[in-house]
Amino acid sequence: MRGKFITFEGIDGAGKSSHVEWLAEYLRRQGRVVQVTREPGGTPLGERLRELLLNETMHLETETLLMFAARREHLASRIEPALARGEWVICDRFSDATWAYQGGGRGLDKSKFLALEHWVHEHLQPDLTLLFDLPLEVARERIVLANRVLDKFEQERADFHERVRQAYLERAHAHPARMRVIQADNTLENIREKLEEIVSTLC
Ligand SMILES: Nc1ncnc2c1ncn2[C@@H]1O[C@H](COP(=O)(O)OP(=O)(O)OP(=O)(O)O)[C@@H](O)[C@H]1O
Ligand SMILES: Cc1cn([C@H]2C[C@H](O)[C@@H](COP(=O)(O)O)O2)c(=O)[nH]c1=O
Image: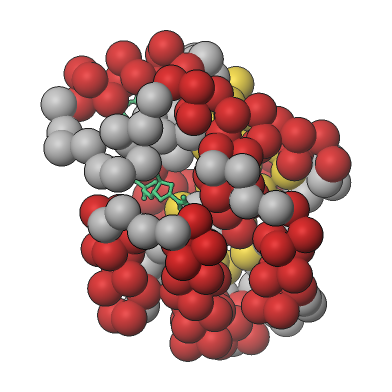
């Protein structure tokens, strides 16, 4: 039987990465074989593209095409083979991030996003997308407390991140069967309880 494809989404600092490995372990305890991966990245080529994408200034369409190029490679060499073997794949960000960051944040024409999405993964969408949503100020505060070096996206102004947040919420509203909004301004324990409840509907 084909495996399940779960993606995590949200603005920078929403808390996605704090739950990705936890969810993988939770599913492994239930006997699933689980792969954890991320975008941009997830393959040797994708990780090289990630370095460029997170650090170099480039034209919006170059940025979008590179995100989808990395994704094409990721799907072909890692995600699709794993799902075909019956494994579960948990991916930290996928195409909804392009919708939100390049579309909402930077103003990419929606028809260009939809054309690339159709080209690169017409027949594959995540079985479940967990959208971590919280006020911008809370996410910013977490990033400051973590005291990490900020990448190109994290250095963007607050209005950029607010547009990203709104684009994610708009997308979740348009895809209610696939996307579940998690109130991420909450304790790790409460969020994990919610994740268990949602994921149990997939098993
Ligand atoms: N529920 C929470 N309550 C308090 N702090 C949290 C919570 N979740 C995560 N954090 C902290 O916030 C910071 C950002 O979390 P994390 O790296 O998981 O976010 P992220 O969404 O993956 O961010 P990015 O996309 O920027 O990598 C970390 O220092 C983490 O420990
Ligand atoms: C897949 C994808 C990602 N981004 C941005 C969003 C984040 O700011 C970075 C990735 O960093 P993270 O710490 O791993 O979350 O890349 C994007 O703009 N468009 C995309 O399609």
